[in-house]
Image (cartoon, rainbow, N blue to C red; front, side, top):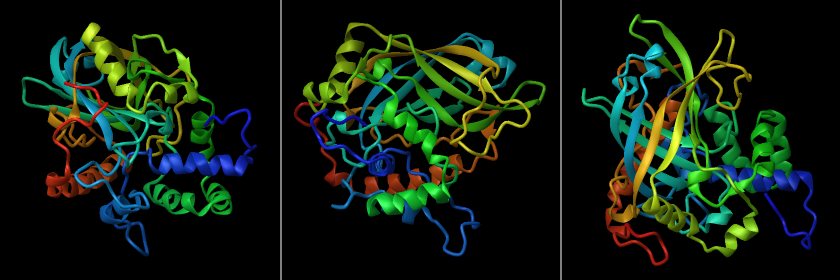
Length: 353
């Protein structure tokens, strides 16, 4: 998180509080629905409620990642993925996609430069009727190791430096994410961002062999760093305007890379990156060829539930996908019940279809 050179000096713990508050509004809405969060069960309702800002949720909108814009395009599979999964999406061919670029915030009107984490929701459909949905962010690791720890973060961040110091003592894994949030360069375009599926999934090949896998989308566009202050000068909705203009001029591409775990790699903890040198497989290219304003776009009512998987893919021992599924469902139910409150015409200054 940057600060003006003429502004006050912020203590290290205070800086972590700021980062934590960003995470609280940045991370996907994770909730755990099994019964082991005793003695008081952490439900999707409790966690989604905890994500709401002080003034209450933005009615009719997603409870997190509320600011976003739709896109359509295709996934060009090169066939390399069949060595890992029998899913048709990895056979050589071209499959339709729809998705959503988004900012990880509960405020649909947040200025771009105030939100550290960016995301992409993606759906790929294949002729056999299977659908693959994914929700990715640009951070290389998640902030905490368990859904309960995420709820703890939501409770601790608003209470200030001492509460965050105690939180970090309980959850030291947070520092890896804080390091990224505080030092990684910003870009001025979604097209220049990598997007990472931080959770582990099991891929099963035609012989029935399972392997733990994570994936990333790596941009063809060269990332150009920008200071947050400079991004702010370009306007509160610049990212949506920029990606709409860029795609109108030429399709934008990302390479999908699968990373395969080795025995002993931690698969149940998205706050832990796998060691460098793990086997990677480039399985195809995401091509975005049209950007559409969300109010009337095809992603408006899509729930990017990460447990919607094609045959040949399944959840692992990572608890977050099932947790996210339940929280997303709760968020979906709330926003659809509030449909009358959602603006169906794009807000002034937003990118147009």
